[in-house]
Length: 223
Image (cartoon, rainbow, N blue to C red; front, side, top):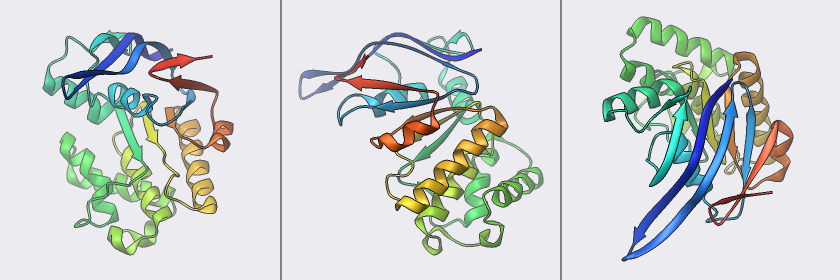
């Protein structure tokens, strides 16, 4: 089943009165449970593609469909609700809030969504156990290693049961051993929970985790 479809998507940025085309008539589909690697040189449009699919930006032309429905007709509150429930994000820089401990960082997206506090913290604790960090639940980001912070960010992205996870260079700041552990963990979760994963990376070694690879160059998908 298709959960994401891009039809003739282009994205243009205006920089100092000059038009920069970050994406140029991109067409692609993502099915439920599929893992797709997106690769390409810097400036190819990878992050722009992720921002559009993650509903953090809108295309200049073309249409994005989620579960078969076009997003162009959605209001901002509807987009926000969809973004917070349908999509989970894992970034190279963990974006954990420094003033909150591990379990609080995991719980925040669900609390924003309006889920009951007790239920949310019970689920956050379960996710901490699943990423093997239950003994670090009250540690702040500054007290965690890079690999531990990334595991917290993975747990956080799963708190609202997303159908799609977008990962932008999730191992880019980690050593080889920590990066492998993080990818093995993400791979286990997407298989167990039937989540689709779009993985943006420069590292060809990560292709082994995916069903297929999409290559971008100058905003276009290349063979």
